Structure formats: structure tokens, C-alpha cells
Amino acid sequence: MNILEDIPYNDEKMGNRKLVDEKHLLVMQIALKPGQTVPPHKANSNVHLLAVKGALTVGLDGSDNIVKEGDLLPVAYRTPMTIRNTSSGNASFLVIKTPNPSEMQ
Image (cartoon, rainbow, N blue to C red; front, side):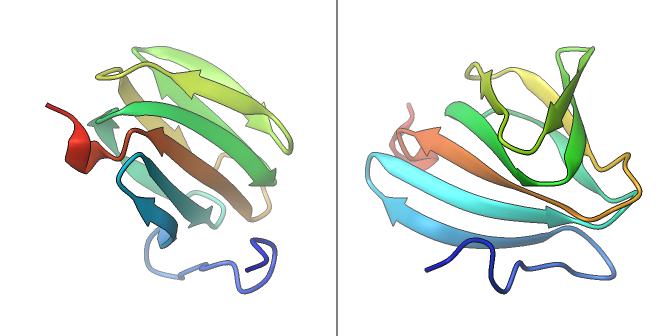
């Protein structure tokens, strides 16, 4: 699989696809068109966000972080977060969760 091909952009809402779904690892690809957001939520595992295309604004516990292509941002378990594409172009990133949230107590 090539994560740069067939990026799951959606005109109506954020696009996403599972790349890896194993007991100790979940990897998702999220695709955001300009202005789109990921609904506010808390990290449900130990998370790393890896920007693949474009730039994002990631709010972690009320503090904004600019994440651009190639940046890797760690997110601690249960941290409140918001993710939005505030740029003028499409953005895509990987969500790497260890362990898989299904294994969290």
C-alpha cells in the first residue's frame, strides 16, 4: 500500500482509512480538505501524529501546534485534542496508536 495514493479525501467531512489494525498497533490515515476538522476528542491510546501532506493545526489540551509535512507529534493518552486543516491546500496525516485502543483498559 502506498499512503500517497488514493488518499481518502471527502467533500463532506474528514476522510479516513485503516492501514493497520492489529492487537498492539492501529494506524489510520486521515484526509482533510481546507477548513475540515476532526471532531474534538481525547486520545484513546498512546498516539503519534505524522503529517504526510500539507499542514495542520493540532490543539492539545488547549495549546495549538502547527504540524507540517514530515513532523511527528506525540499525544499522551487521554489528552483532549482538536485537529483542523487551516491551510489553503489538502492535508493528510497518519494516526499511530500503540497499543490498539481495543486493548486499553
